[in-house]
Length: 609
Ligand code: DMJ
Image (cartoon, rainbow, N blue to C red):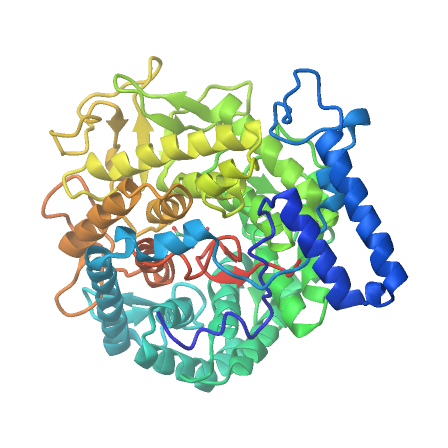
């Protein structure tokens, strides 16, 4: 972990005590203290006398008050209740702010075996893998979007903004890779502004989540002791976002066009005219944060119009089609799925709400409502169990809720366990959220689904010969079966439950499963998620590492040795290795109740309360 991460110096002021329960006595004494020190109300003796009488009166009430019928001091929710339904705790619970500190349970976690030498060594292996991936990229492809590790050259598949450099930058910062931070940061400083002013077409979503998100996260995390000063990242981010804004300004509705010509600051729709729902609804974390740190509201205003507009559109139990028209502003078609083109719409509903302060900020309650309804819809319409062994998976409705159910699940859907768990506990550990009575029925349902789905996602790896997941899996159900399409690992208990079609057997080094394992580990503290992550990491090491440098995508995960593709996706450095590194490390690094990760794994701080 880089010592230079300035968690406390930018724009985050944490209140670890936000949700902590306190005894009424402690609250009383703290309130009294606060009155004394902060307001000086009690500087005259009459004031002190009055406060003493008040305290005495309240204490009597607490001791003698008529309790709810069964004579128990606690009602069924564990809260003290008095005559007339008056909850004194509520009156008194205006605790003074106390300095951030770890609660006793968090303190214990720091020095128990969860961070012993085994996990430190595994984390170090991930750091070395990142170094290896970066060295390959630097050697053959520096400044290109992606490395083609087999042909040992670079390729610009994302518009030519050096996407790997920016995607990798904050991972290097989090890992404390000073040299890589210097190399990547210096490249950004020397080249990126010029590139942005010269390049042509880029996709609004991809450029926002990878490049803008990467720059903003680097701005937040950078201490400036390696690479350029943090403001360099911010200035480039502003220049880029100013051009990307044309996607919003050119559209006749609140729904932005999908493509931007950077050098002209103009925008146009994708061929076919439609935008993807996930794409237009997954730029808000980045634009909001840019507005917060630049002081210019225009970025946030434009981006949030999209979500406010989608709120007004008709949905199917909270679920939405994967296409939306920037011309009419309406959804197009009936195809509902949480895989490609649908996924991060659901992710950003809850994450934007969290970013804006969650319950503390009433302006965004609609996002939480949309999320809650959508997850109910997922549980009702999309969740099924496979046969014979009963894996819980999320399928698709290609023709809407009246059409046939498809038991197809993209690997992309594996972001969902992490999002569900995060949405349930708001980034706290499950233990803490339970102890503090913070989980609603919905939250508990979602947490359970998160754990079940994470199992299906992990088994998508376990069931193949390489130990790596295919891009898409189908699940065997009463209505759907296909023989002879197994993953190649005969010893897997779920060999019969998971069907992998020929065309879907590739692996692009995607992050979604390890992302969910990371979030679930942080929230449940169940080490099985770490062990699963380690198993996946070892499979990447074994089958995707390229001798001359870097890692590569694969054509077919069901055969050994697998036929290799020739691409190292930027998200392998931006997401996959970052989540693995965090999974094996200390929980206090990028804590989940203080940061939200954008959909490309770039952490952005949660707004101050
Ligand atoms: C990433 O670019 C993002 O996570 C996006 O939301 C979905 N796909 C890739 C990684 O698989």
